Length: 220
Image (tube, rainbow, N blue to C red):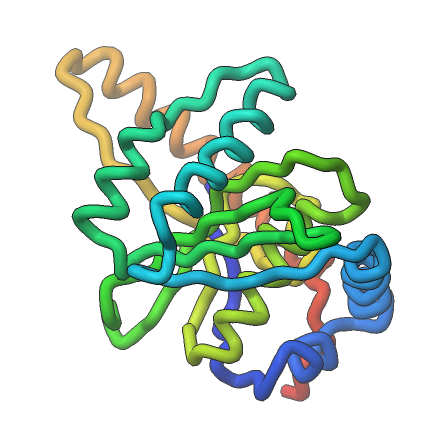
């Protein structure tokens, strides 16, 4: 029920973005980024045709391993990413993390094709890591993409569905919708009655989340 977050083109750079957050969240993000940096992790960014077959292989190795470590098989195959690289290379952005000159983690972001409704949007994210580093997930999947979006004039970064913890990383909840057609009239009626109650619950939940907004109050 959530996509993420606000417009970023208003910010000059990542530090300006941090300045828009309340002190607690700003301090937390800086601490998390510092942990990754002090662990000796550095990032490189590759886009479109700059992403080589070897890069895709490394990404999939990280992606597959991370899924397996959590007891799940990856639901996308290496062939899927190969086809995406062939058919729509301009829509992919990859962040590669290295430590002591060795690649050790990777995240992959999808980019909208040109401007849609006057907006440029980045969508996250697939990721994986071969080594454990405290806060590496946040850096690879949120802070690096956010920093890139601000620097490259993207209007928003959709950090993925679910996860209230993302609000601490300055990603705000956004209501989304889906469309379904149910052939059985009685079942459709039951679902419609449920959704009427669910909408009230979602409205209350959104109000609760708004009270946890990490950004400084704006002057009215």
